Length: 210
Image 1 (tube, rainbow, N blue to C red):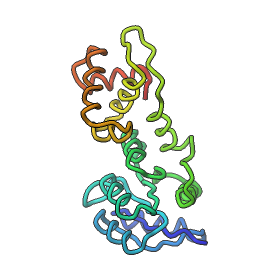
Image 2: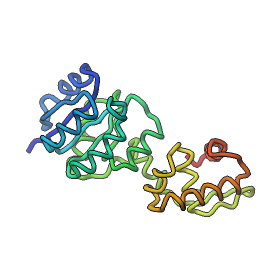
Image 3: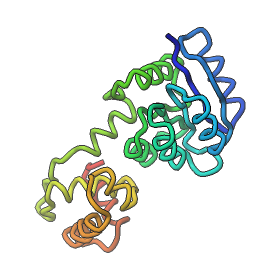
């Protein structure tokens, strides 16, 4: 049985390249979209098994489209596609429900494997971009530092903060309220003796937390 795929990317050359790349496989291209708005419309019409979605697509970035896809077509899996191995992009993909994150420079088999795994409901590969990020986000090990006595939750929040995530995204990932996130952030800044989130992120990177 073929996997029904919707490709959403604003560059025609990329879409055509993917069509050629997936020719002769069990993947059936049911629709192509050049914008976020078109992607949402076609997804509701075609109900694809998988949406291959460009991170930087017009009509709202890919993450806004991802959020709406998870609401409008919850049975369709979403694989994010990007030129950028950007940890913030990967983290947001994980938090908002993407099944995987694939680089546009990946080989044919890697892209096909991601689509097949998503369609079958499998977890992303542990050594892939999304799999590694999920491990980071779920890591509850407390920081071991004589100068900062952070709790496991505070350390976990600091990892999220260092990835450039918003309070809303951190709250969603950790299943806590935005108000609780704000309290944790203030506690972290105080314990690290830093002025803002940027300085805290630099501290986390230097400590190898992300």
